[in-house]
Image (cartoon, rainbow, N blue to C red; front, side, top):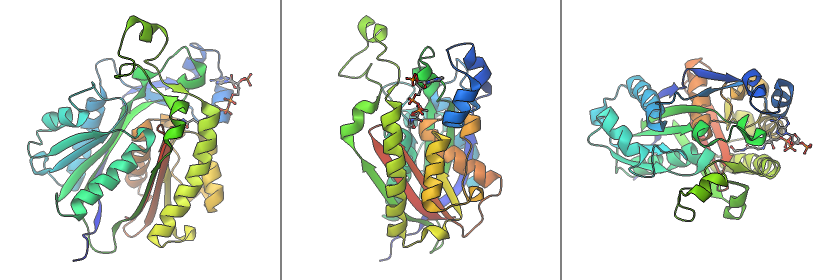
Length: 328
Ligand code: UT7
């Protein structure tokens, strides 16, 4: 029996209202707009309100995605939330969201693969639907990085923002939907990007708070090198698996961490700027939300038409990477 074709049948996104500009950051740490824009491409980012947690951002994106798919919450069968900033250690953000949505029938779990989490989650949901275990799935990338960012550390605080992007997956006509995935990890690089506090290794204590273990730690230069390398290799591999040439890409949706990383990938693919989605200037790096925010925004702007070939690729803590080729 031929495997079912699975694709995106609904999209939604949400960013919190509050905008934090580079000018405002200049008053908080020793930095300046020129440095941030030239080194990262970021101009502003959205920050969750004090009462908003990751499930609240995810909820807003999810409601929009379900509406655009024409599926009611009651008919939803699976919810996967990709996040490294869950509302709490447990229950999972996906279970909290299941209750908020009233998606009583849906199985629900979180997936932890940092900025690659959304593509990992797409691959998992695609597998579930292909095998017939479920007929639809809500896949969300949502993160509230502002809650784990040290706003006295200029090396990291200029880089991150909050947001959520959601898609509904379902069966699509043959020839459409996901053609290939390439997922990977290099656990040896785990030390380069991490948050150590609050887990079973370093449970929360006065010491973990004092030593900054509840904030993101990153070796930016090393992560940058990893990113440039795997954006290239993952893209080539996922295209090979899909049987597509780079010239066939209609829309390139890279993880929005740094404009220089995106540009190096575009050069490697010989892609003109109009085929690449770039919104890192407005939202900064939103971790698992970054790729869906870019994809959903491009779809809302009419930049992708039925039949277009779309390539998603991201990298992140773990270290991890994830890429996918799909026909819209
Ligand atoms: O989703 C995955 C997560 N992470 C990433 O994708 C990040 C990947 N890495 C990067 O994007 C870049 O490495 C950064 C944007 C983090 C840094 O850019 P860079 O060109 O690699 O700069 P650098 O770390 O080599 O730092 C250059 C200088 C340093 O000063 P010295 O040591 O040369 O005197 C930093 O202290 O820039 C300084 N610096 C800053 N200056 C002004 C670092 N942060 C800032 C800042 N404002 N915010």
